[in-house]
Length: 222
Image (cartoon, rainbow, N blue to C red; front, side, top):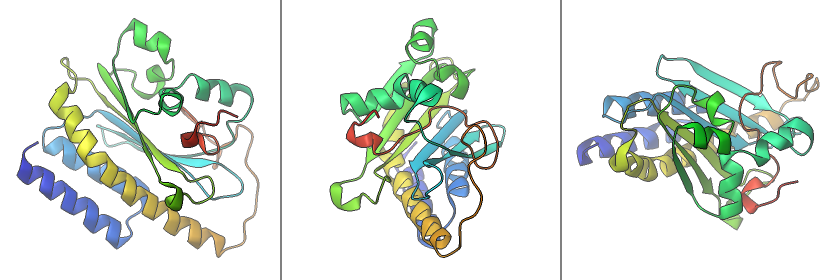
């Protein structure tokens, strides 16, 4: 991605964030434009904890075929959900304090992180990132934005592609945080009814990969 393309994508993120675009459109629009500028993305996901009292967070997924996924997940403090969290790349980032984890997809990395096979089944390389909020930016359990990025290109992302992600994703994370806060404020103005269906998702659907628990960016595993 050259400097002109980078500047154009940064401008688009800023415009959409200021306009109040919702998270699925932010993620899909970002990915579509990044691919057009040469970033070899095939799958992406952005996750953020929520201020909602019934579930913990939101998962926004994108695939190169245009499929967009929205999932809302329940607690990962116990049972199978906690086991999945503890074996996820995101938990590794929380424990290590690092902002980025990068793996070529092979038998070794699939054994290390079983969830990779779910989120990026046909990938050759996978990148997980966490963008933590500073103390004054934390609101309840919303303390960071997680994201994952996958490519099926034989040579992977390459150092240039990963560098592009490192420059661009913090800006996308900021726009997603803004959109999530806007939606949370709107929701608090309405009465809440119903309960989380069996399986901990809302609406009833597969929760997918790597549910996130409370204040995970701070290092808590329970």
